[in-house]
Length: 297
Image 1 (tube, rainbow, N blue to C red):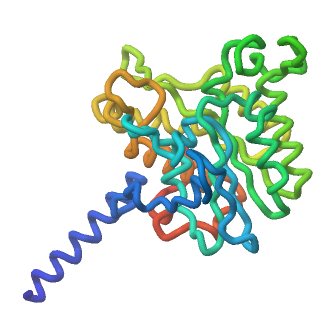
Image 2 (spheres, rainbow, N blue to C red):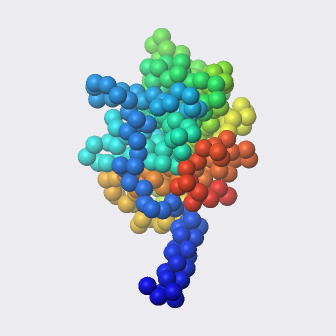
């Protein structure tokens, strides 16, 4: 290859790389096979075995939430190929420096994740120096007679048989308190938005559980990632046609993305973490994360 041709190719590569970085897209394209199975599922018999830290000597980032964080027994949900962002996000951390353990479970709410086996089995494993990132809200409707929490952030309660049901904010505060009592750092994310567009081409977001999550974070001085807003803004950049393809099956699905959508959402989480005033993960990111710019409103 001639020197001039080599320089031309070299410059073109730099420009393409810069363009990709400016869009907040890490290259080369991430594949589902790049997700270490141990971060999503443990070893043992049965359809699902809860994952555990690969190296007990390292700090662990625990992920808790619903199917938009972890979908299906291996992170992907069968024939539809739906994924939560807790799968691809592992590629943005250096797993030689920090464990990533995705304990989220499809169908859960802030309430039944807390009162059921999921939190009870996770809480004793959290140690000093760990991080726990939570995202709930998608299944937190329905009131006391359903499986979700009561609306709002107050201390009001209702009875469901013998169970005392609390508000969405109350359950988030319990997670925060118990995480801190273990010497770990809690992080609250607002829920991923459901697919909906306004007549003037804006992606609908905010309201309800997104606002309540932020209110709890402010009241408890907890690190907060406005994921609902970050994803909404990113989807507006992509446009309706491209966003439709991120949800599967397309176009009827409104909540769950496929692999490509989960990657976009994971990069939005990383952008939100990088925007924190004192980002606790700045020493733990992988080289892939370098392409993701901090979120700017």
